[in-house]
Amino acid sequence: MAALTTVTVDLPAGGYDVVVGDGAMRELPALVAVRVPGARHAAIVTDEHVAAQSWFGAIDPGIDAAVFTVAPGERVKQLATVETLCRGFARAGIGRADVVVSVGGGVVSDLAGFAAAVYHRGIAYCNVATTLLAQVDAAIGGKTGVDLPEGKNLAGAFWQPHGVLCDSALLATLPEREWACGRGEMAKYAFLGVPALIDLPLVDQIAACVRLKAAAVAGDERETSGGARVLLNYGHTLAHALEAAALDKGHPDALAHGEAVAIGLVFAALLARRLGRIGDDRVAAHLEVVERFGLSGALPPSLVEVDPEELISYMARDKKAAHDLTFVLDGARGLELVHGVDPSDVDAAYADLRALRWGPAAPGGPACT
Ligand SMILES: NC(=O)c1ccc[n+]([C@@H]2O[C@H](COP(=O)([O-])OP(=O)(O)OC[C@H]3O[C@@H](n4cnc5c(N)ncnc54)[C@H](O)[C@@H]3O)[C@@H](O)[C@H]2O)c1
Ligand SMILES: [Zn+2]
Image (cartoon, rainbow, N blue to C red; front, side, top):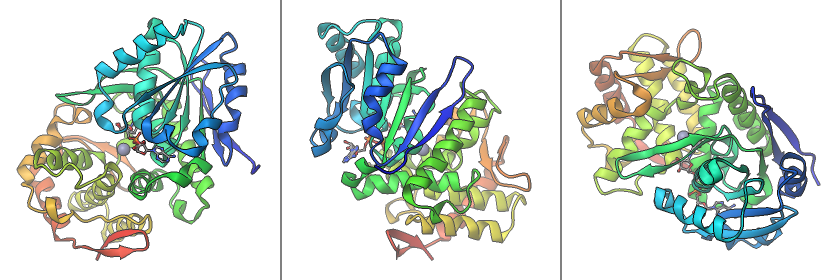
């Protein structure tokens, strides 16, 4: 077996390890035995796609386990599913000292983590992250929760896992669009401290992202305003607005989250240039990183006509924006949170973005020219 990399998330209450590499899932029995020694039963939470993979049967927490399978996709991330899971846990005799094991992408870890946070007022959980996005982002950091009809991730809890396993071998079965999602988040990390990220082997790319996420979480466990964790939202203000607009316009599949983040990163660079924070060279660097990750910085055809006013109203509503237009922006001191951005500058940067052409691919996906 290839060597595994361990990254520790240091937290005042003790922290936990994230194990990255080919075969990391085989660490699960040891993780449960060492970190949740009192557990007699495990509740494995997964979705139907993941449960159907040939490797799923090899998931072994080392103790008696019951499997709880939810439907795949974001729609299942709702309070009603948490109730169904908790009731299932109760019927299966999962007790206070037992453990929830999430096996899946970010939907499953958000859901299972939240169920673990509220069941018996909080029991232990571990994440076996099976999407690239979950391995570099969602499975780490203890943000758990569900969506409400009024908005994404509106109900949840900070509840840290006891350990996270990022097994790169499990990504072999991941559909291409899900790879694109993960690569969008990876492109974000390239601006958070590892500019040459794309040149590393996949396992090292994942480990580098995990280190950045772990450091941000350790410095700011609960995402306080102005804390280190807010920089993880780089590219996300426009991304969330575009995702909301796509949904509203009846194009729910126009943009996967990572694809929206790629556009959001380029938009953030265009906005930073409008504000005199960076020059053309940094804008070009953003386009290059996004393209090298096989994504496009340009708007997809179905969204080019979305009115900037509408996007600005979504951005002002974004929960990260507090009361004004707030963006994480590049500048001479690197990334920082910038408050009070003038809507006219957002308009102008959006016009620059619209002028980018959605074109055929650099290897792996569409690129802008
Ligand atoms: N808590 C956080 O800090 C955080 C951070 C980022 C994103 N998120 C959340 O994560 C969610 C998105 O996560 P995601 O992109 O992992 O989506 P996901 O969990 O829906 O997984 C994507 C799809 O891939 C399938 N799948 C998963 N692993 C597979 C594998 N190895 N082989 C084949 N198919 C596989 C799933 O069944 C699903 O259909 C969103 O709800 C988002 O809000 C949370
Ligand atoms: Zn994201």
